[in-house]
Length: 283
Ligand code: SF4
Image 1 (cartoon, helix red, strand yellow):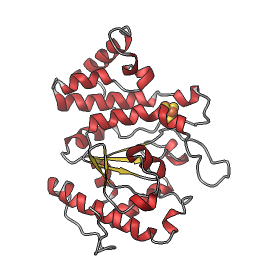
Image 2 (cartoon, protein in one colour; image 1 turned 180 degrees about the horizontal axis):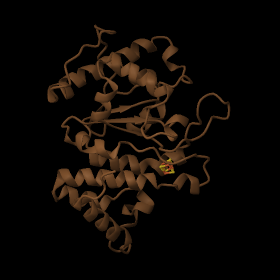
Image 3 (tube, protein in one colour; image 1 turned 180 degrees about the vertical axis):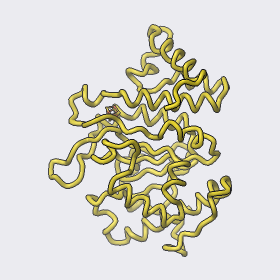
Image 4 (cartoon, protein in one colour; image 1 turned 30 degrees about the horizontal axis):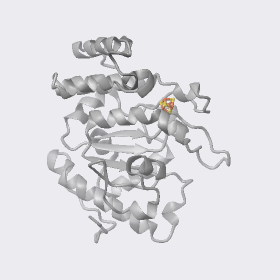
């Protein structure tokens, strides 16, 4: 992991200084132990102290700090393993070089992700990337354009029924929320794709999937196109009319990709969403 650049060493030093100052200097809610994010460093970034390179190193610093988080363990929740990183360190410069950046927000890692290095590498991920392929976006293209995060970052363990994984509690979601907020502030995404009810609620405040899947909605000033959860434990896609809603959502993502990423990157060729040529845009 390339962690020895002069900037990252400087940022680590700055972080250490900021986090060890008294509360009178660094507000309590800006300290890593409470917020999980280096909000004071955001201030320096916003003052244009070498914004691009600094953002790369802030995001790398963020992933290192995230990987050490044990808040839910300390609070007694039955989470397992370590947090799943939202991006590989070597992929961060490419991701941040994009003008059109995407924030994909899942629910929580599954057992496979908890033992791996990337989000969505298990069965649900395979289904998700099949959906994106229908929108004309391959897995490599999405991973190089999107920060793939989740409402919570540690494997929550199996559900009590044995079907699928345990859904993280609201308390776990709120303990993990500062990581998500910090990623959003660093990435400044132009598109957010929340996946599943927990992520949709976290990003939009909406909870009824049939009302939002297949539509474009606002998330704090950012375009948001929700998708259902691809887990086999979710029965939503089999409900009346829901396959059409899913295809409409993929069509919207395909349109957005062609208008933004496809136009920006020579390798991001324009595509059509052939499964739903009529689309169902509600924009
Ligand atoms: S789920 Fe989030 S807040 Fe909880 S221990 Fe993992 S990274 Fe930390």
